[in-house]
Image (cartoon, rainbow, N blue to C red; front, side):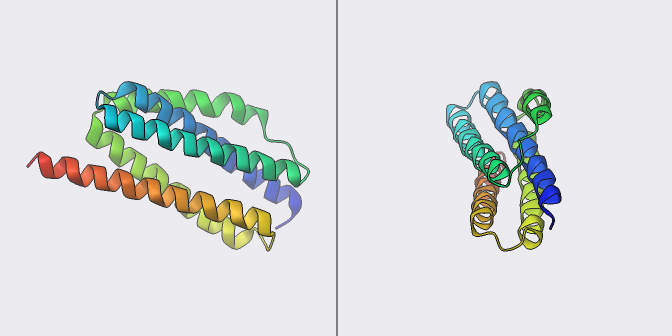
Length: 150
């Protein structure tokens, strides 16, 4: 992958991760269950690490994290987080699972296309694994919620 294409793609991930930070932060403020709220805050913190790591990789490759992502992604994430938080816990968890699964697909694709840069390879893999862990937590919480509703 050419450097300019790689930086453009990383900027897409940068915006996605910014949006996830805002989404999970807004959801944490919208749910009543203290455990779920704390878990969502923790997930937002991990997503912020992804933002920071991707920004560092963009800069290391000679690019600049897109400033539009700094403005638009948090706004859309906050709106989506507030909306999903109001929809109820089951739908919130399902939406989060779908988002994390999409992120995992995108990270897997990027890993295959990114080349052999060890630093970038490590960041992409670490983010992919975190997204997988988030998905598993959301799915486990959804399963538990549905079992209690029967």
